[in-house]
Length: 326
Image (cartoon, rainbow, N blue to C red; front, side, top):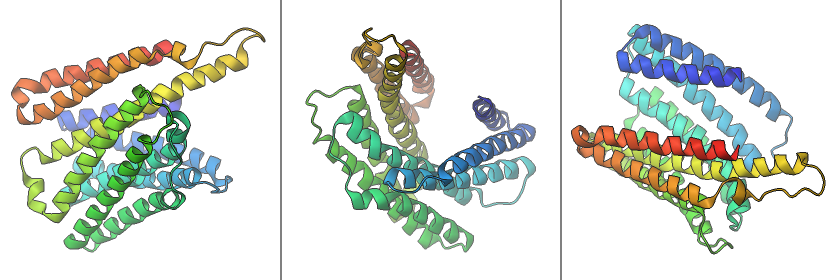
């Protein structure tokens, strides 16, 4: 509970510090988020330290903790540097921070969880053993090499590592899409649709990263970074997380009911706890918000506020659906 409060407060402080350019808010955000995540890392590390790495998921979770530590450590350092006027190569360091956060942490964590939830909930074949074991370590190794290249100021090596990381991510997303095409359930549900949307958006974003690594002037085009961020964060990670929530929340609720109702009393199915139609309507709202956000990059004066309103609507709808299941 207290960690949740610390993370939420730190996120609000960080956004406020950027919005109003207040050094005190940025410093407070670095302290609050850094301390909160450090406590989480200690707790999670202690929990996982006694668990042998007998599966790609367990190994991936352990490596994702290292990615989270690197991402938050770099982020706190950058926030303090902005607050206190320290001389840092901010564009290069910000890219590296994003690499740790989106590749070594979020990408590794997503893959580790996908190895379990995609075959379990979407009834697909299992992931190939070699790629399952190799992807998390490969991503962490690439981001570590990226860090070393930044420290020794080797721009060509940075571009090479960025391109390899993009290729690794595209390979994982493409493999997951292929497995979904072999699923045993004929009728697609909201979860599979959300995953397809998220994987396609992530592939497009990573293709942009690969193209910019091959030809750096592309990254200087107007809106390039915004398109990349919207595709990867809202289209990719957010869609994939919502897709998992729509399976995990009703499943946990069903398990809770089954373990606590009196013997002989029927337990409602997962579809009764969270109707598929409600999930589909919310998914359409999310897809519309994604399209408006992308269009708003080109026409911000006309579409920025409608896009923000659409994202609020889709997120509020998600809250309503999950609260109903709870």
